[in-house]
Image 1 (tube, helix red, strand yellow):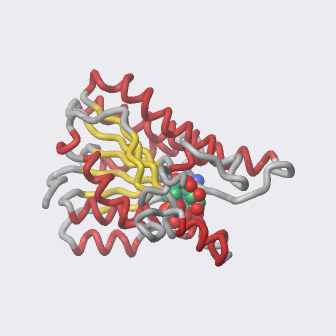
Image 2 (cartoon, rainbow, N blue to C red; image 1 turned 60 degrees about the vertical axis):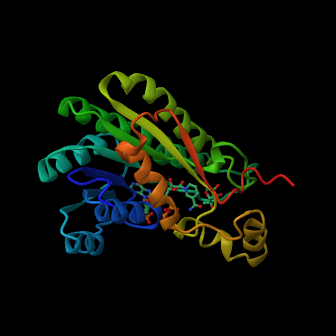
Length: 251
Ligand SMILES: NC(=O)C1=CN([C@@H]2O[C@H](COP(=O)(O)OP(=O)(O)OC[C@H]3O[C@@H](n4cnc5c(N)ncnc54)[C@H](OP(=O)(O)O)[C@@H]3O)[C@@H](O)[C@H]2O)C=CC1
Ligand SMILES: C[C@H](O)[C@@H]1OC(=O)[C@H](O)[C@@H]1O
C-alpha cells in the first residue's frame, strides 16, 4: 500500500538499525527520504533510489546545536518539503550506576534527549512554515516505563523523549502536526550487540517476550508508518509499545 505517496520523510540515525528499516519502509510506502547520521548512508540512498524515490544523506551529530536546523534546511532544499519526521538517533552505552562517569551520562542525555528536542523543534518549524501540518514520531523505548540496572543514564532520556512528544502534541496540534512515540522493546541492532553477546542475558530477555522472540528493526516499520500516515489522523500524544508483549509480562 502506498501509505506515504508523495510525502517526504526525515529520519535521524537512519544509517543503521531501526532508523534504516524505517527509512526503507517509508520509501517502499511511496515517500522520498532524507536521513541524518554520523556517517554517510550511501548504500541506503542507492536502495531508496532503486525504488524510484529520491533520497538524501546528511552527516552530523544530533547533539551539536545547529545541526537540526541544517538537516531540515538541506532536506527541504533537496526534497522540497517535510511531512514526516522520525527522531530516532540514540545511544545506550551500558554502564553500572555507582561509578558512572559524568561524561557518559552527559553524552547520553545530549544525544538522546537534547538531540531529539532540537531535531523535533527544527522539523516542527519547517512543518509550520509549510502550512500542511505533519507527523512527528520519536523512537522512545519500553525503557521509558521500566528500569535497567546498567541503563540509569539512558532510561531517563527515553522517558524524556516520550514526555517531549506529549507536550509537543499540545503545542503543535493547532498547526495540524501530530506527535507520537513508539516504544520498542529489545530489538536486535548494533546498540545492544555487545550486551546481548552474553547468551544468558539474551535468553532471559527473549523468555520475557510473550511472542517468543526478540525484535528486529523491521518490526518497527508498520507501527511507525501507521503513526506517520493519515490512518492515524486522530492520533496524537500517544505512545505505542512495540515489544512483543514484554512490558505486560509480569508473571
Ligand atoms: N535496539 C533496541 O533494543 C532499542 C532501541 N531503541 C532506540 O532506537 C533508536 C535506534 O537505535 P538502534 O537502531 O537500536 O541502534 P543503532 O546503533 O543500530 O542505530 C542508531 C543510529 O543512530 C546513529 N547515531 C548515534 N548517535 C548519533 C548522533 N549523535 N548523531 C547522529 N547519529 C547518531 C548511529 O550511528 P553510529 O552507528 O555511527 O553510532 C546509528 O546509525 C535509539 O534511539 C534507541 O535508543 C529503543 C528501544 C529498544
Ligand atoms: C539497547 C537496549 O538493548 C534496549 O534499549 C532499550 O531502550 C530497550 O529497553 C533495551 O534495553
